[in-house]
Image (cartoon, rainbow, N blue to C red; front, side, top):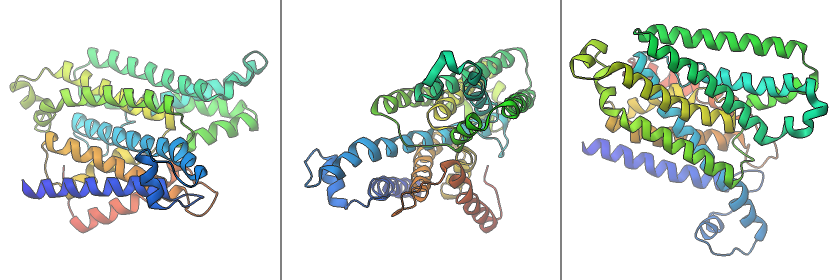
Length: 340
């Protein structure tokens, strides 16, 4: 137990370092003492640095923390529910639903540009469209979950929903003008920046609600690892528990996609990375570690995406896969075993 405690302390230290790096590095490098003074509420000798920290980099760091941990929790829930190490937070089609909502707004809404005006390109319109698309998919999945008993059938239905929505997006892209298609592609790259404190607050509320549902399902998750028949013999209400897990995943992954766009890799990989460090299947121990691990990985990818010292920024969706996937491959080859 002491080694698990030490590993969590290590993750907590890495999280603090990740936050400080995220606040310090970027197109403008800011000294650590200025960051600490600004966070403690003391005025800085450079008001520009203070403005950058409080109004741009701190909201972005908190966004990375919430989205990284939310996607990591969603990945853990899906991998346990389906007992499949390849399951991720978007396996139920939530990301595809959000993408369809945004595609309908940008590329389909271009037909009504004269009426809607600049609202099509506003940040809130895109957030609402992505949230609406994810919500519709969630309702469809929940309706299906109440009618079928086979969990794997639910997984297949989720994949089919994702294929269907992707096909509709492709049709919209085919008939869309280059201007609107480019706008949609930029959204699909993902972004952690440009969120106001109000938007970060709304994202935090969604994260908190999703985390609450996940915590309520912890006890039953351990039983599910041994199979649905065993879980049922232990008194687990399978249908109710399945709906609880789906709602938690939908809120966490759906809110992340709505505010930051689709972000790959994190939800799939973090549970496996954390299990390499903390080899246990007890979800009560895993959950806090996975929250920390998801936040650390997203902060690290955000620092890399900023290209410190340069004004350019790489798409966060690409960075999470390009720099994260080789790490997972190396760890699995080194361990020669997938802990699940």
